Image (cartoon, rainbow, N blue to C red; front, side, top):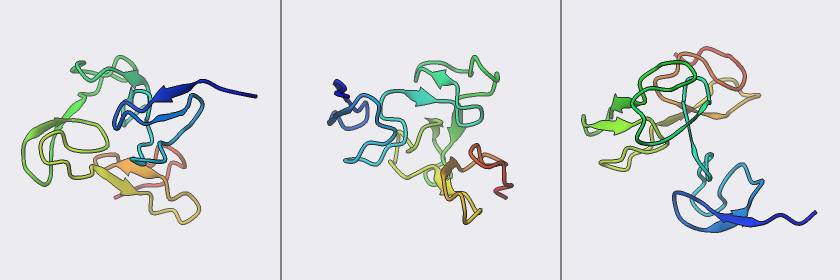
Length: 108
């Protein structure tokens, strides 16, 4: 079944509308932003997640500046993601998460 192509919000590459990852920039959220704690859809200008109520801003561990809880720091561009320690999972998770949002394994 044919699908319409949409631009990735991170790199503007047109990809299939049902894609879960962007093949160009490797973003796991090519069409919108998600809360790293509950995976609820959020907008970049929101202060709190409407799904779980957690703050959508954090301090970057690299540059020490406040940034949106996305895949990369808005200031220095360093990745804010870590790999799940479960060898069967391996999903990328936000660095502040206590548990993997895919398999539930403790990350720290």
